[in-house]
Amino acid sequence: MLQAPQRYLNFIGNELTPADSGETIAVVDPSNGETFASIPRSRAGDVGRAVHAARGAFEGAWGRFSAMERSRLLMRLAGLVDAHREELAQLESRDTGKPLKQGRADAQALSRYFEYYAGAADKLHGQTIPYQTGYTVLTVREPHGVTGHIIPWNYPMQIFGRSVAASLAVGNACVVKPAEDACLTLIRVAELAAEAGLPAGALNVVTGLGAEAGQALAEHPDVDHLSFTGSPETGRRVAQAGAQHHCPVTLELGGKSPQIVFDDADLQAALPVLVNAIIQNGGQTCSAGSRVLIQRGIHDALVEQLIERFSALRAGPAMADLDLGPLVSRRQLQRVWDYLSDAQASGLGFAAQGTVQDNAPSAGFYQAPVLLTRVPRDDRLFQEEIFGPVLVTTPFQDEHEALALANGTRYGLVAGVWTRDGARQMRMARAIRGGQVFINNYGAGGGVELPFGGVRASGHGREKGFEALYAFTNLKTIAIRHD
Ligand code: NAD
Image (cartoon, rainbow, N blue to C red; front, top):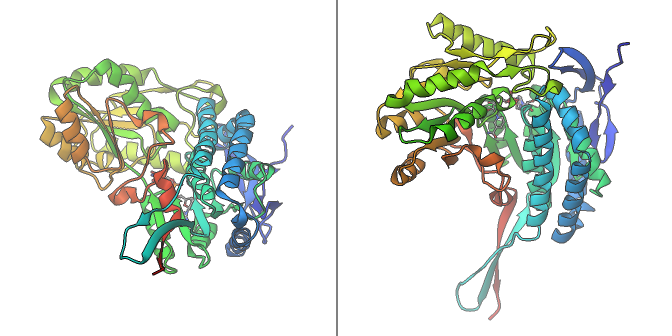
């Protein structure tokens, strides 16, 4: 028997509430294409209510919490997320199509974000500054007030965790606009936050379309800081909207991150990492290692091993928990198909392709992983973020050319360098344009503690680690004259 779609609601002022208009958006399971839930289609009025609730909390009960009390509350929330890990993982996997093991890893990372920032909440402090005789000068770090968080669909729990946990830790009140394709776990986590004791209004989740609810949040004059994660084009729009009311904006945008393999590298160590960096989450990862640059002498031999591994990869329903799930939406699948048909039209054949499980529902959004080799620097597949399980390789001659290729796109997010030569490791790490460089590894397992962000079209500002706490606070200088 068909079940009626479950109706999810906004979370405003610690209450579940529909959009003022009563309108909803269907939530589709990417594994089978079926609608199983709905979320509110919120607009400016709903966003306004959430911002008002946040302001009330900041100026009221939440604003009176000491750093130690915030710390204890976030630690309780980390515990609740842990206790509900399996429920959250299953919900996330159903909503986004990610394999269950990835859903579980995301839920674990979410709890770790709350734990990490719980530990940091009472350790952020200012300085005293030597100044003229008769003065004492000190700095204090203060919350902005109301922070807006616009989240993409690829890692809702992780991206929510990294910005909301840091923002709450320093005393801001948050309004979150999740991506329309991935809202469900964030509504659930907001309920858990209330259960942990978060006062009404300190954390609000408002769902809706980007051009409506997202734009309204970016434009709202009572939002004091915006944290945006998503595409470069939307990031530009959000920054422009924020600029209208002089609102600081952190932009975490896309990437076309290179992994550079020199001929002295430990290839057996590199191989599984090269593959995983592009198939994790179906390649729908901003920091996906989507270009492998290989020194000419070992290019063909390494490609042969990549072919073997790619051919063995399997995609299937999220709950089958294979190498990959479906992509998040039909729109995303179409986007990947467009790139792949362009590649074929320009004569780039597939060197290898994985498979989709035989009995995967035909209405699901499946794309088997694809490997393309010897892709030239000026090709779209080398330059543009595909956001799917598509890996390209390109040969290079020497360090100089490797660097030119690595830095040769509009992005600058993450890079991996594989070499045993210590001096070269350091030269490459310093010369690569980006926010994170990994030597003989890639991603370091996610690293909640490691500052993250990009340059150029990959964005600006840093989240994660202790660094995020600076972005979520204002520095105030107080000069006291006492002679
Ligand atoms: P997107 O830019 O389409 O959407 C991101 C969010 O912005 C969603 O919540 C969406 O509803 C909202 N939005 C859309 N239009 C808006 C508008 N006019 N005003 C305000 N908000 C609006 O991106 P996406 O398709 O959800 O995510 C994929 C992109 O995100 C990729 O480019 C990827 O690389 C990037 N991304 C970056 C990071 C990072 O940390 N650097 C992490 C994940 C994803």
